[in-house]
Length: 271
Image (cartoon, one colour):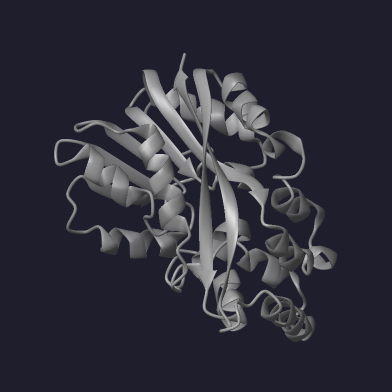
């Protein structure tokens, strides 16, 4: 298989460290979404952009042995590693597929979940509309997106701003403007995509770091890697130094610190 390009390539390169560097992040975020979706035993569930399985695990437990949970992701190595992780869970399947055009039969799922995926897609309403077609009538869609960001985390992200192309700036600042800037904005995406009974819940998730170097390691291990790769190699050392300097100022006296992120869960039913 050819090496994937674009965002799929970024996540493929991050697959070995994704959610594996000792920072509680994707799992607590996904657990909140799973709780909002309230999957019942025997339901058929689709996890879009499944990554290393943070959402797959609680969905599979809820669906049970009589259910079926399919995880799809565009990054082949991510899929390969996640499939290995779930090889002994018979109700789980993991395959390579595009979030926007997964090539799945209409009305084939009771529940669709997408944790930290929607804001990466160029046409969010188009994606939501496509996901609606995969659900049975009354089926549930739940998406996790970011609410207000810890101001210190925003300072760290701002180090990359001079290097980012316009489309990446849009993705990273989507929580500050556009539909991802408010509960109403994200709810509007689901309403426009053919959903009703749309509601929003929130959870604060804390990312805990041992020290400044741990923050750097974490930033390379997931989607933020795309920001690092936008920085010319000759300038990455300087950006790292500035990140470490900032992070050391956040320390608790023993070197550790944490950032808090408000996570938004938006859930609706297919009309």
